[in-house]
Image (tube, rainbow, N blue to C red):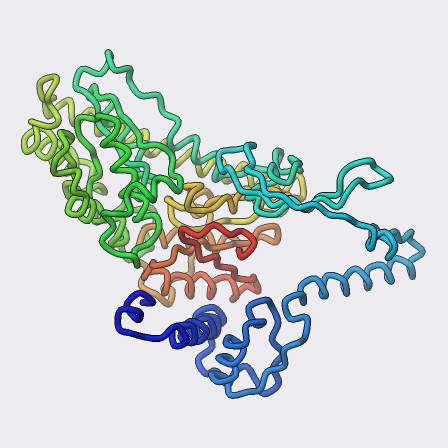
Length: 502
């Protein structure tokens, strides 16, 4: 919209004013979710670095109709609050006769400090975070450097493993269980290679499709793990800026597979996901997951010139017997030129056998995730550890999409669970306020119900910018949690990586 305003001749001042107003409107109406700006009251103190911007402050005053008070240290109020807490705790410890020690340097030592500042690229893991290292010299007592490091997405970047190595992280477990399949060797795959994008519904369905094609004698080639380069590789073919980041990444994954020389790329459309909760009204995939491969087929020009055919038929993925017939027709009758280049087409019986094996593997995968969830809950009880259900969509398991939030949580000593690892343990009281017809969302509601039943468990919801359905699901999850006195937290994520803001 900024680009559109520029095209229409809007001045820089008008655009900046519009942005300032949008910041306040977003905070009041989408985050705090008030209906009337006057609900903030008549006496308001604003704080935070954002309010150091005079335009943002004025926008708040105009929308709320109050003259807000902005402290001189508005941008440092968090540090001021932490100082007050430290003071109160020290006073309480002194009254209790406990020893009180401060690590704060004396004024003379503070004035003598000669801090250094540098930026380095962390190589401790695949994130390769750009770290900002502030060094305040050596501590006389320990002999170690006093460093303050920012920009790290996990504890490794801070120079310490912390306690997270012993804390369960089901995002990590699920990622390995999902994609750590060993494909056939090239000489053991008589029917050639099939490329599968590591995107969208493949974070739910990959075990099925890997097993299906492997049983039929194909070598399954998975696109590389997502990165910023994946996004950049597909940016020219993206038809919309408003679509969610997981969908944007799928363009780059298709480009990655085209570079691997596969015989054909497989990314089917599926209106329905498998039914998991009989109490839900339906089990649809969201429109993006169900059909985005159509956008890929129509917008990636390289697919028109490549020898690798892009196959994205509509399939009855939730009905095993119908799926057997449709797969035979779509793969080996309609597109035999792409799928049978190196060997004859499999028979209907072979396709049916492959579907049976794939269906069983899909169920085994889901059973393993649920078993790991139950195991983690028992571990939490035995160790007295608190857990967080980091709930979202299956593709939020992608580290490029979740921006290492799971690792950040485990660095605090918190166990991290996925919504599908515990959803089977929750029983919702129906009907709920929204129409419960989306399979991934049904899990969210059930996982939220489980969180309300345990004192050692809380839920944080991951929400991708541009997800229209989450305008409803976030309200429903919040309602379930707050009805039992739980605090609801939602993190909106997109291509921007800034854990400090999160």
